[in-house]
Length: 350
Image (cartoon, rainbow, N blue to C red; front, side, top):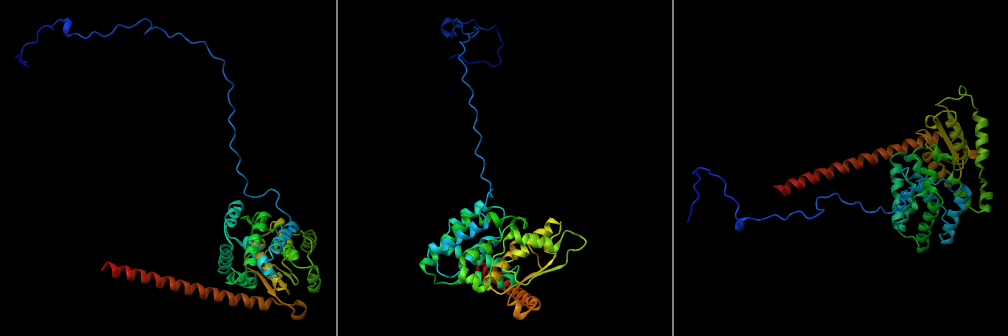
């Protein structure tokens, strides 16, 4: 057996032998020739790509007007045999108007429509608690619109009516009207007034002496009373409505001031109203319309009791103290809970 000597001198390479040679195949004709172009096919017309569907705008271009909204809410409540508790449908409208998340009415409408009656009542309680921590005086005045959600025993008809009324208010653009981040855009309509007017019978309104002043008339009166002279009225002034209802004149005055380049939140607003439901609606509107920290509402008889401003100021002081006490108590409870978690965690680790 021959061994390969790595140190032997390199000689001439051995010529290829037939039995040890692999011959590569010769190129066939045309293998390296230029490819003959195929006859061109007629070009198909290019398909025009379809534009993706435009996203639906969050806000309705033509939201329902006030009378249509009020009638829709009233019809939904009575058609479901909700009963004579006006505070429930009014509270539903107030809940949607006060919902803190702004700018997403379509998304919120889908969220609310996916809830059952018990979950919707939980939303009512949540929104009342949210605003009570920020404006306890106004929410206390409006508490009649939210207390029903804390009750445990609602009839099946009431539960069905609660859900139907939520849907009717959503379908008729409650969130489109009150779901803007800018309070000016939320101040073009008084949904609370139209709801009260539609729910209350004509005879009841006449007995109470309650009449809905058309917003156009309120706008004209506000413009005449306030005027357009920037030197005659300045931020820090006070504006009083002794028979406010749900705040129609207040709304018009605020919008007129905004048109003059003034911020209504820098004025002092005081509204008096004898009807508890209307006063509650006015308190809700003070928040929705962005009337500022010095907006107060008092429920009482202006003719019999006169100026209720001192009572409203005292009421706010008491409610702010209660809010602060509750916040301090919650902070203490939270701190104690954290300490217990740390102690229990340390005990388990030991």
